[in-house]
Length: 145
Image (cartoon, rainbow, N blue to C red; front, side):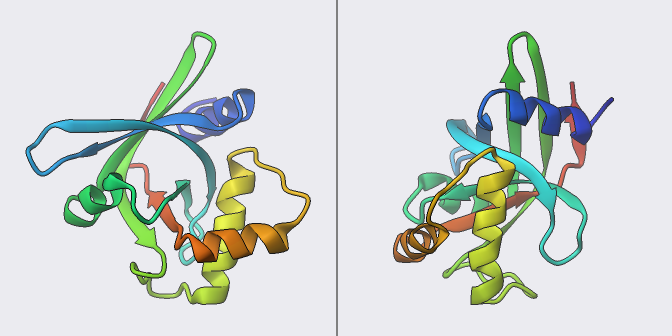
């Protein structure tokens, strides 16, 4: 197993906990812990690494200006990093082919790809919409084990 398959396998071993790193305007690296998973891109169907971001997260400003990220997952002594260009889909970040209904479903898909479960997806949808959550999709140009 290699590449994105390894990444997806590791996601399942530790609740989708990952570290995402972005480039700030001053050229320093910002990293934060997120939940991420591997899923099909909502438009192209290609496999991407997805995470959901709060609308006010500083990473979004960085990603809007410099749309590239590295996401690292680890479980025990195994790890994988996926690095590549980023697309955003959210209320303030329209992605062609992703309307409001597709965004609602995409946020669910990312949540479940990261290992999340929910007993009331209606409530989940309402919170995601109220908080103006954004889907962050990383198309892996490089995956390292």
